Length: 340
Image 1: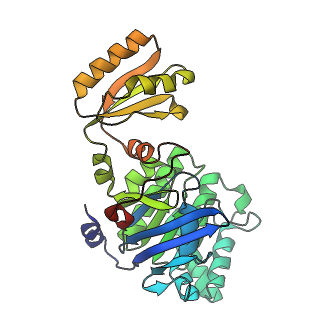
Image 2: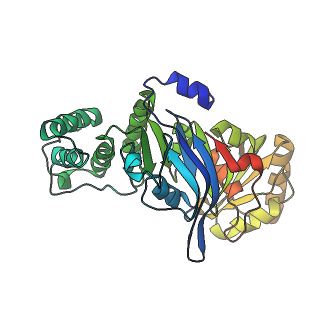
């Protein structure tokens, strides 16, 4: 489903369009954003991916009016984030990386406090808090002090605080970090409901499965630049064919495996020491598998697993961000502008 059809399939129309053009920001000698262009259509989800330090959080801070860029411009619902920051704040909700709720207040009191900060009267703030608690499944816990909540409940309450103002754009900066799998799935369902009703969502995440599950389109940042953009399916197609995956028994053998498989597939092998694996794109699945198995057997390297599978976003991400010290190539015109 492309962005236009996705937006049409989601009723509500409350979401706003986000446009970023040539956005740049440096902190001394460190370049955080180096001319970022992207666009998010109303009532869709844009997944923003990148390694730590790629520029994701800086972009989020600019869009949420917390940081002024050095160059370029950005707008939310046609409103400039720098020159009309107060108006932009009335349109957005921000759920940061850590739950920003007060443990000494009850869940309902936290939400009522945020509603009052939005300028709502006492009665309206109470009504809005009850509405959010019901939506999040926290009605029974609404009268409890937040320090008694589980991590998943605190995260949901923090998300609820960002929804009290009924934002057209919800910015979620790694919202499921630290959550258990069940709480993560519950939050995904909640995001689905929001977007179906018309909210636009900008999501940064370290979980590739999360981006694959939620995002209509994905933008990958590296060294403050857009290095790839498209739907999850389009990005996977960049790998081409299948992927050969080898898992080493010993972490010290990962680099040896990478060298062993070099030149064998349709692209260069990528080492992932975290999982003691090497992945290799291939267009000739059986020939690559048999040759790889022969080379590994002759090398004497012990492996836990060897097999073929379809490409995943993990493969795309690792391929695009290969090499800690590599400088990025100049992005193409098509990749510079991410049409969400």
